[in-house]
Image (cartoon, rainbow, N blue to C red):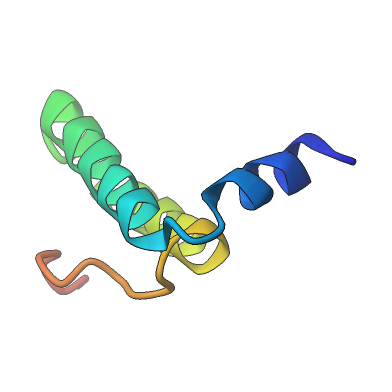
Length: 65
């Protein structure tokens, strides 16, 4: 069993908590980098949400140009 499979198994049933962590982590990175890598962070958040979270994108993100 791979490490990712173990993570998925532990998060099963706790998708909303995982989503909160994904959003908070991305917001922290944006804050510390001054938004310099916002597009990359948002892409990573979307992929993590699809894989481990609720599959919903964060609603508080500004639209990308």
